[in-house]
Length: 190
Image 1: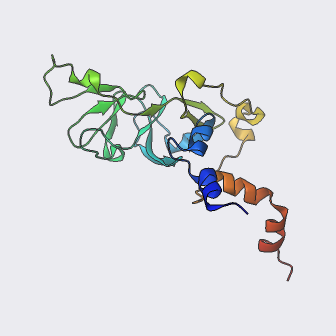
Image 2 (image 1 turned 90 degrees about the horizontal axis):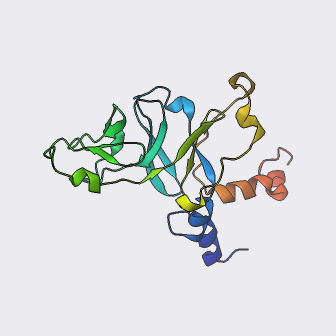
């Protein structure tokens, strides 16, 4: 039996927590590639490791994963326009590219350099195996994307699904491999 403190250490995955720091050191599936099917398509909400994020595909077809709120008025970028290489906030039109760089501030004079000082959190993304993978850890520790054999299978030889489970990933894995849990909770034998 875990103590409350040990349970909190294992299950809390927000930025800066022990498990949050640990899990951010790996490439994680963030979205199905099919959820952002075409360049400049509508953005998609993603919640990962305690963070609200937005996934989008830029004009060049690259998948991006950025913080959900514009830093100016905290308006959700989900309501923004995905256009011409970035996601544009619906409130004042600030536009951010997939690296988090502010590339346009329409209400500011062209000669102003304020946009060059504004960034949002953005995570590196790679697409493999019909998934958008994100790395949320320190850039100096960026590992190679997992070398899972099925990632290179042709699409007709893969079947990818998505399931939203409102549970801690580590606890869900533990429950899945716990033979006593499976035998009692999921058994049809009285």
